[in-house]
Length: 469
Ligand code: CS2
Ligand code: MG
Image 1 (cartoon, rainbow, N blue to C red):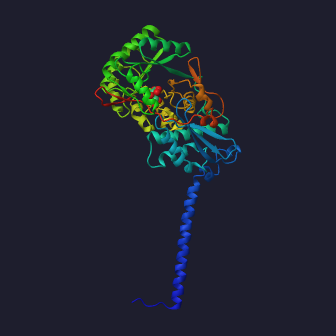
Image 2: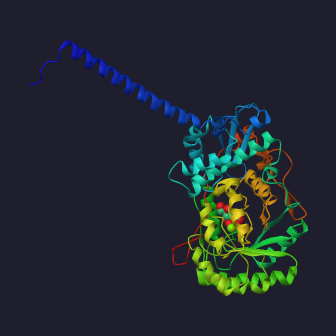
Image 3: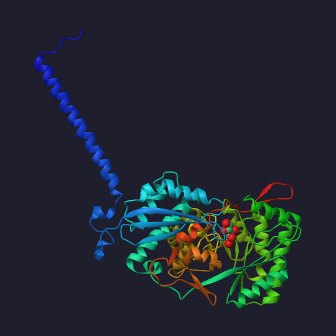
């Protein structure tokens, strides 16, 4: 039976419990303070070191005050990020467009990322990159890396504006007067490809990527659909915001493509640089055969012969051909690039800055590639926005191992919403000397063009089985 305590010991116990309570309370307060301090630490590493990037130039510490996501569809869907700061009028613009999954990236940028960024010092780009890449624990993948890329581009834009320098100057300054560019020449037949290529050459292009429709196959990547009922059905599917399915068979493709380049070399001569995108369609031995059969036509590079999951199989292509190889637009992580670069199984790394984590990631890929004499050929199609194209060129003109830059011309309706971006002249691309990336977004204009659901095409073999598009 429990002996009742004397008055004194009851008071002593109450005192002790009180003390213990206070200690616990202060302890939890302490730990809570510690938590809050840790949380606040996100404010900026700088504050903890007493030197922020700004303070060294007598500027007040800078904080991110808002992350705005703009989803718009002038000619096609784009997802843009605008990071606002505590300095009135100072903001950064980034691009986070992932074709066919735009809203998934927008949700990440609207729901999950802002609470992690607001209050941080936007000048701490590398720390923010590491925090957003490793912080979520679940890392990588096209959705997160596209969202991270959008943030990264906007932060480099802010740093350039605050330093009153174009981003390429922050990256070490110019290594070249411009970035050699290539554009697309696609056609329903050889003559049409020749015609489009000639027009591009007249426009100043020294390098042209050639893609041709394969007779008997409904829709081949990179070519205008032909006039068959299936093609019409495909266009209807698109209008309904559903993926259109093309049909692909390797045999006719492997027969026709070498003949296309034989034809183009005969018509266009030896000077023009020619490229081709296999678009991840072939099995290893088919890719080895194609690379071998294309050797006589001296391609600048043959792109994405294999699916990104099969890096090992590039060895087989190397064993059978000296055609230069490019790979990488489907890579979402720096680490995806390592084996192909380290073993020099490719000659051009073709990452998409918009899907691998932005400028911070790209300059690391470029640095690794330089060590193994692999050159860059960043992805530059029409379904990533002008800010990513600008970032491509800022990196291109500030690295030693630049190779070539894919480019497209954006229609006026897109330029109404997203201004700036790299310019093309006499075969080369360049960026302006405006501070930052040199792009801006017109939010009012963006509102005029609401998002429209759309998908990339898919592909199947004639036996109905799934094939890479
Ligand atoms: C292509 C792209 O330009 C290229 O190299 O691979 O156009 C690609 O098909 C699209 O970006 C897919 O979204
Ligand atoms: Mg490609």
